[in-house]
Amino acid sequence: MIVNADSAQIYRDLPILSAGPSAEEQALAEHRLFAVRDGAQPCSAAEWAKLARSEIADVQASGRLPILVGGTGLYLRTLLEGIAPVPAIDPELRQRIREAPVTQNRAKLEALDPGAAARLKRGDAARTARALEVVLATGRTLAEWQQAKSGGIAADVDLRPLILLPPRPWLYARCDERFRAMINRGAAAEVERLLARALHPNLPVMRAIGVQEIAAMHRGELSPEAAIGAGQQATRRYAKRQYTWFAHQPPAEWPRCAEALTPAVRAELVEALSLPLLREK
Image: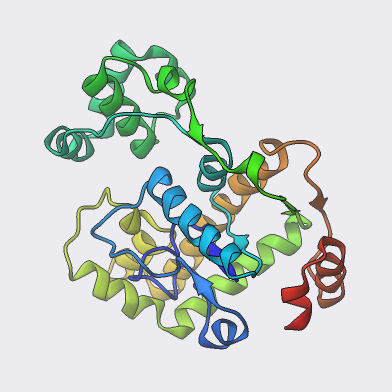
């Protein structure tokens, strides 16, 4: 049983651009938490972790093996380590902050939570907004809330992690190949349908890799080839950040695979992890 741990693949608006599982892949094994949320409804790490806990419990109750797949480190960390008991944020306050310019939110955060401001990059609109809304709504910083995390499942499961860190040239070539393949499969039309909904630009689905590049193509600001190049570059940049996070953030004892993922290597990994479900496929 495959359980999605990718923050883009949870939305049903971008099955192609988020590299969601194909019909053929879904025929090999049941997939859960893929394309289950409308793009107009953002899914936080805490919300995903709650959904994932329910799915994992259901899969285990049926005697099957849940396999979490995805590259959103915050999602996985929240599931394993738990979440901070931050009270619900007033919707009006949240909307006001999310719609404000990041420079304005940054200035307020520097005054109210300088520690968070120092940790966050200046252009990180989502995390800046989150830190600001928490301190404004609760009077406590997000770091203070995070010291009281609860609900993690790491101590209650037999975890068999594997981090994929293939050679960067191989990885970046795959990124380029994949983005072009997405365009060939209809990603441009997919983004056009998303743009027609006129959703707020700060929503996670609107910030998915490739959306802005393809949107620029639809507006005539980029040629198709230039949009593909920009999308490929954005993908490589994200892969670099993701690579760095998974290389250093998870526990040192988690195994890392530094080889190119050839069919032979994939077979060896499946055998090493003792995953009978995958062997049967």
